[in-house]
Length: 218
Image 1: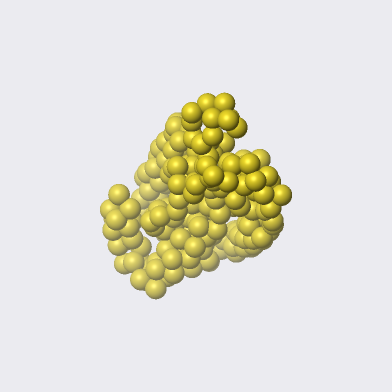
Image 2: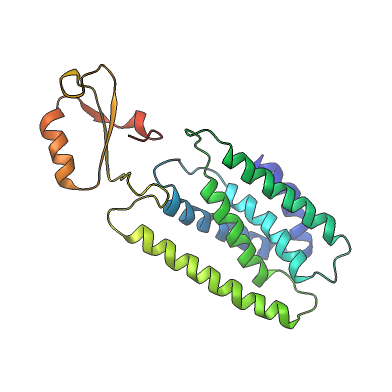
């Protein structure tokens, strides 16, 4: 799916804005999507692929329409198509199962960064005052998001923004009928060395790497 989106969304953009601008926005948005993922869902889902870049291409289409509104002949159908695609993706994210491992945060981060970069780097056929104001607004939004993400991921212990009570610095799985009172594997997570030491002192013989706990909350 990512490949199809890249081909069908990217080729028209390359023809209009050039491959350098398109490639820059694509790659930069992939990095921004990863940064957004680290802020919102660092331990709930793995991050693999280029989905953030695909969403950036769709956002670049939106930025192209906005920055060249009067010059586009088919602006309303393009906006409608882009809105439908966004609504479908948001709806799929809202209806996802609790154990869903799709990186929706990376998708959103890629789209937002693609929109911001697009406002600055798409070819603007006729510059207006409103578009200049929009660039300033987008610059402030981009700097604000960037500063917020760096602040969150640099704090210790790093935590997910949506689930601040689930740390991910230390993770193990343990099996102990004596300690837990059942015959199930349990996922253990600790935010500091003291917590980890307490589990290691009691369950040292039954602890193992948390391979089965990657997508499971305790």
